Image 1 (tube, rainbow, N blue to C red):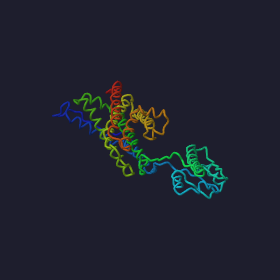
Image 2: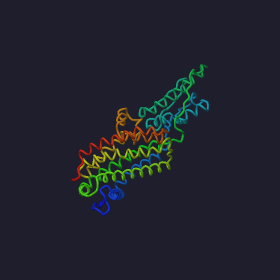
Image 3: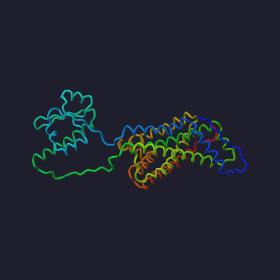
Image 4: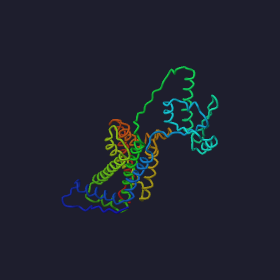
Length: 369
């Protein structure tokens, strides 16, 4: 942690509520952040690392194809019309010419999803219990093929038809979902760790005591910390969005609402950092407490894992966590194509959370170690 000296001696022309104290404190806090390599890494580069990894590795947001080995002749599948074969090919990858024993061996190793054989009018499908989702997908697709073939053989036209379409366009990539989550996580880490560690270090070195005795209003101390944290958050937002756009991010809807969402989220997690810094007595304890709060919250709020794919109890928890509100608002305005109204509720919730937690943190706050 780098040392930052704050000039608290009175100067001519500076009033209690003058702007010089605010500027001096803000510059000192900004220098402290820039010189602290650990803070810069975890605030900027750590979330950015996940954006790059997910944006370059998981470039296709569609479901992966399941591989099915066709053993011997399987006329029901092999004689399908070209349109039907093309439709099946979007979900299943059909492999032919593989001996039965080799195909079963690959199935046991989960190298393929299923083995399909045909004996007369009976189709024998062998699947693995290792991947129930893949097995269910293969069975569902092949059952629809068999049902369609049976209808065609009997000459009875189907009574109902299904027309399907996708909400997102074909260019949608995993980066669309990763970016809002990493922005929310980066904001949480930057604001929480910055406030907590600064508060503990300044209290230990007696800087808070000197600030209290100096002709500097408390409002200047608070507003300078808030201003620097918001500036850092906006820099994060610009960098993350810029890198994500290079990797394929397409901003939709009222994406500009990410700016006020970021500012509101910063206030919420500044209050978390204030609480951690007020309770902890050492920098190590402050970092540990901040990690204990932000890291589990990231997993429970959908920052790392889509909350829609999580168990019901996790989805319920995400609805009462500030990071969950922030990530949901960012997703709605940045990638789901929603209007500015989608940001209003998350902003109100994060601001309310900030107000309540700040009041709680003041009960534990002390100027001296």
